Amino acid sequence: MPSLLDTSALVALLRRSPPPGAGAVAAAAASEIRSRAAVLSAVTVVELVVGARDAAAESTILELVGRLPVVAAEREIAEIAGRMGRRARASGATVPVPDLLIAATARWLGIPLLTCDSDFARGRDLARGSGPGDPWSGFTLHAASFLG
Image 1: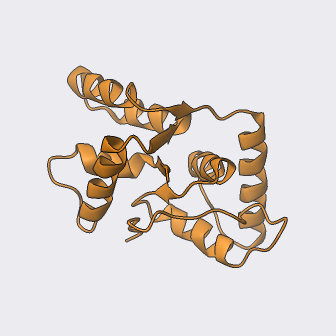
Image 2: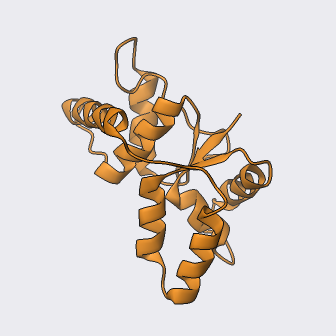
Image 3: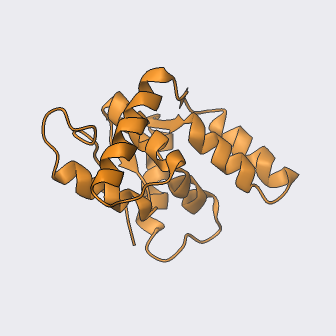
């Protein structure tokens, strides 16, 4: 089954040594890429390019993402993200807009999100308590995800 790779999973993979606790995420990301099961959100591409420290790093990033399918944040994904954000806010949680778009992409595709970004812990918790019609219903994390 494919997985949506979050920005943090690719950062862990691209670093010489992954951050503490993120080794399994980096290994899972590498495995997903090798097996051609990795998918990216367009938001992840933006975040990676913005975070590139120099032209060489940007080139490495663009070479990697050029081999992977990228899903744009179309209207339906944007609407799902908006509903997810409104539901999070109503429960007292804040999820950054880029993370809402990434989570909505995973939910829309019906695939798990591989991440080591603790912001997604709020989404995981909202999904656990969701029922039919809840915008977080169906949002899942990859088994290798690490939320610190």
